[in-house]
Length: 263
Image (cartoon, rainbow, N blue to C red; front, top):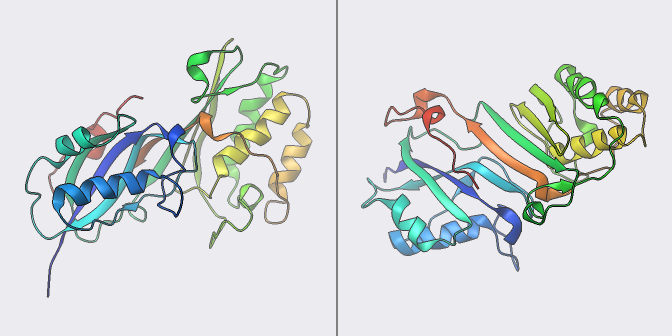
């Protein structure tokens, strides 16, 4: 029997030039770029399993995937990959984990942030959503807090998204608001496909006065049946953090102490 060692690879990317994380035909993805570069350096086919998927145009300050290799890595793979990869993908760290550790199923929680700006800024075009008029921003945090009591998020699920369950546990949902920028932070044990973008899109129509808070309450209460039909554009969304139990890290360095690469 051939035994393999399992490794976590932690990396960041600017997603504007890619069709999301997942490899697919006729489109350039983050997974494709990483697997090609790793295959060249390790002289074998490498299959990465990510903690989840991000859509086209979505960014990640901390993404995690795992792969198997037959032995200890022969050289500093992180440094070699950073020399080979395009500048919008950056490896933070590669470390060995327990053989049964899984990038997706071992994760304890994920954190996403969504960025909105109110005044045109050429440097934020592909990293934030421009919204000029938001007359009711004070409604955002009370509405977001209702997500903490929600268990079924079917109203935010993408149609034909392939979810086996719509249940998630949201532990944090809050907005930081100033005169020029709004930042939404949400933390949960898992997310449905496009769930964060659907939540942000729905909350924005409330802040714009196009929908009432009563509409939001009804949407959540009828979650399994009703669909919000609203999704914020991808460029404002960042995967910020994926947390794992320290016990799976064989090098005894907790993931939580590793700083994320800033994009």
